[in-house]
Image (tube, rainbow, N blue to C red; front, side, top):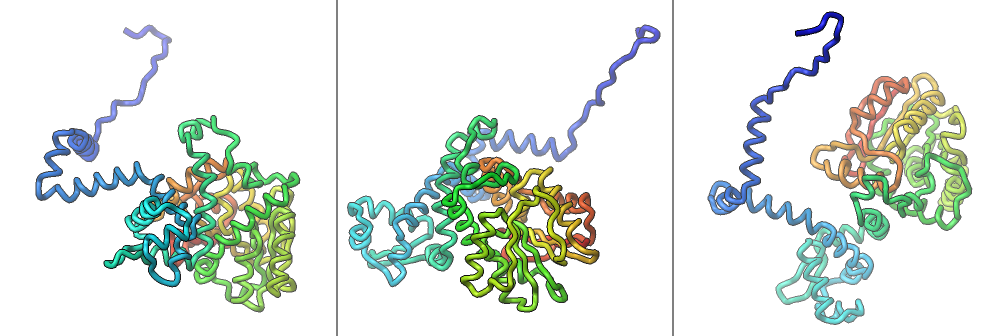
Length: 385
């Protein structure tokens, strides 16, 4: 009985799971059963799937060990040692300063990860992955840099709860506190901007291959680091005026680097953050290369609105970075980059859809994704003013 004048709380109607949810629940109960696991490992039609899943779970558990094997190879310069040809395990161990048995432990581990290969005569040679690392020294720098990330992830639960601060990565990246212009130690600037410069070389050509610059007159690269991207752009587009904007000490380093490359007259380096005030006008293209994902939503929106205000009608904004949800590379955005930025203390990976929504809110239109050669490293969104 309901008393007149009384109010009743009506909760949401019970939700009945659909057939997909019921099937998923049944499947999960089966897969979780030890008896089913033993049966699936022996049944001919499920044996391959069961073994593949077992290997995948073990790789997740052992992933840190694999990464440390790679780190040891880089620190010992094993791939450089094998650059000129195969060597015996005894020779390698001697040159690395390791006892023969421990040297062989490293070599076998590296071979199991397809970094090197063991030849029929017992010598070891480079495999494709090891050779690729020689051709991309910036990857070796990133591998060395990951020592800080691994230290910050020593207790991931504390990191997720916000109990692991300050992290090493937050101290390493001086803009992780939201764009502060407080004085930064010169050695710190040299370390992080040098790493950015090396790693940016990996993607500069890919982005420029996909970025439509025909008919444009001036490109401003916001957060441009030491100018690696603009140096590539300068060589491809000799008639394009170029500007770089970054923290004052970084912009100073960029000016020195670009002058040494003979590009001092082509690139104007500006020292400020986008939080200092409006971006300087005059460019009809603004690029944000691996910049937006470093900032939380409020700062990212402020940056996009500043870019919109600085561009003329018909101007173009380009965002290039790894996206969340990239097909075939989901762990790169959502696992690796998600936890890296969490440890850094600022930003998050975003999908193309999330970035598009931010661009619309900032006033942009004509948003389009342009295909890059290696989406795992960088995808590209452009938007019109």
